[in-house]
Image 1 (cartoon, rainbow, N blue to C red):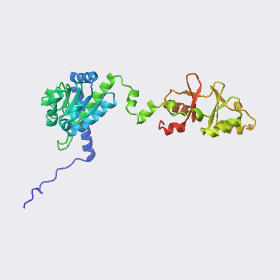
Image 2: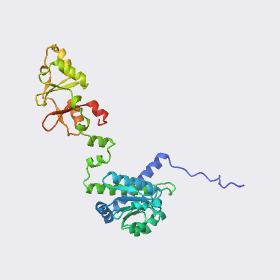
Image 3: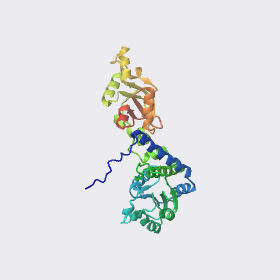
Image 4: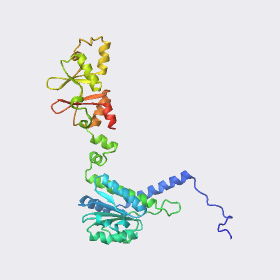
Length: 334
């Protein structure tokens, strides 16, 4: 059987890998730049529609568009817009039941002719949902059927074969980010709002955990009265294991603090431990932090003052807790 390959023809020369990679990145960047210059009032209308939405934003797309759609839905949800992804094929087999009157569906299809997406357009409208279409063809069936159409047209895919969705998916992803972040900006969404939807992340820990969540309380607070002996103070430090003890007045307001460092200095000064009062060796006017402050603020104070622990007070200045760097490390605030 004769070979189908003409071995006499030289193989096509391939670009060096780094050169090709740079060309791909520049091509996709150029397509995003072109998209930015094409944005018009339809984009502003889409942002306004999402802001006024009384229901949820549902993103749907098939194939690669579906993967991009999942990310867009996730970005919207994490930035203050209730959103989820719905697979268009599953929608035709029952998942349309997730759609309610007042929802917005962002439908993704590069061609605008995806059978699975087009099959649910009419049912979506009957349910009372509005449709924002993102396609690469403004004359497509989906573009014409949508309430708002956003163009994600690209001149060229970055794939060397011109086949794999690359530039087109990058442009849609960037357009989805722009939508989500413009909505975020219009909502006056804050870092604290963002943290509330990310309680397991480092940002959530830094912006949501307060001193009162981590501090030692009640019998776990090392504390002695101002007339206590140094020996009593040392025993309290040993029992509570924080390397310090608070010294309080009759109203339980901190008037001093005695730490391991103070003990070493007392030995250096030949203080008689057996007869000394803790008031003679304590630091007066101790540094404190309010119980409602963020834990990250306690970290900043400790780092600035080069200390390992803080006394915690309430509005009346009464001692209500104690916190050390180990507690903050365990909570992964640091």
